Image 1 (tube, rainbow, N blue to C red):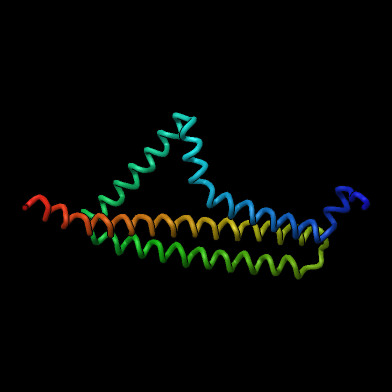
Image 2: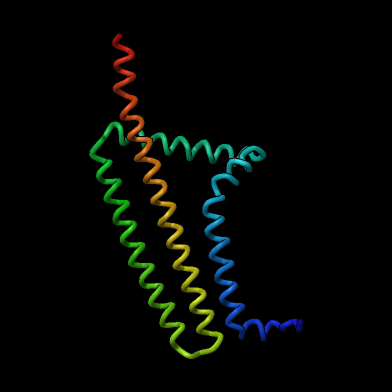
Length: 158
């Protein structure tokens, strides 16, 4: 099997396709592995432990704020819907740009543009997933704290 030189690789659609696929896979795996890696790193790093503690405190304060002001739950849900819709519009824009870049016959340049727009689209999708997961986590904690509050009051009165 003959080895390809760098200019040959850059001119090969297979190279660009595989580079985009590998980039997408690394991004998706990295998105899901981030929390686990932060917890592992926190065992060895005092700075990471402090950062994780600050994030947990901020999360608890956000949940307590929702419990104290239930009207903010609607605001949080509306903000999540707005974020989702704006990310969908951005994704559509980048997909249109990707199709445009592919349709213009510029050789390697259009492959580079389509790869760049695809990476942007994937990063926006990951951002939307991360935001959605945060909102779900906050709302779930809010619901659990709402359920446990009456039980705690009932336990104190008996």
